[in-house]
Image (cartoon, rainbow, N blue to C red; front, side, top):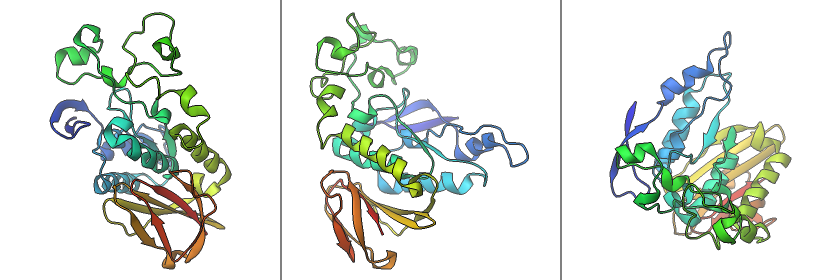
Length: 280
């Protein structure tokens, strides 16, 4: 099916992207009697504008149409779609990391997402994508080489790479972010560690909570654990009343990586472009 897609900068509409509507996607799971694919890939979040109501609607539509025996799969960007940090911005990419790693289901990362790589400019003489040569939509900018360090060719190769290295490779690379306690790479590692140690994030149920753009909230529950995920997709500080969720607890993780263990009673206050995971 052909779909109109707003580009990463939101200022024009591109034609020709191929996607599978949710009502068709879920049929690939088969039925209880005749299961087919375990993880048919769900591309919807990789194409959508970075806006709370749009994302919420897509997440809920997918969840509601999944067969009872099916397991969700989530990803934010691919080799066919603009990179997450380009779509959501550097601050938004941190919130997106928390969203991806706390939704019920299996998360998938596209290479470079964990360090905040951006779409990179590709001059016409370096273009490789056949689609880009036929249409206005080239996929080369999101396919540039992984940025490992600040050396020549970003440590990707000692020769000439197939596509240009991103211009920000000297600061946006694995080596530069590996030991930074507040980097996006550290955030992804902390989120992965939290998933390993919190069964509610892997096998727990998911309960949507009242929210209003640019705010998202949902709960992940297991038998003896309740986690609240609060995501602010906008620049202004917000407050969320947690009285009806238990009223007190502590913050397990903030996207700013500076609030672990903070005790919270009645209200959670969080900054612009901040996500927090709160536990009873």
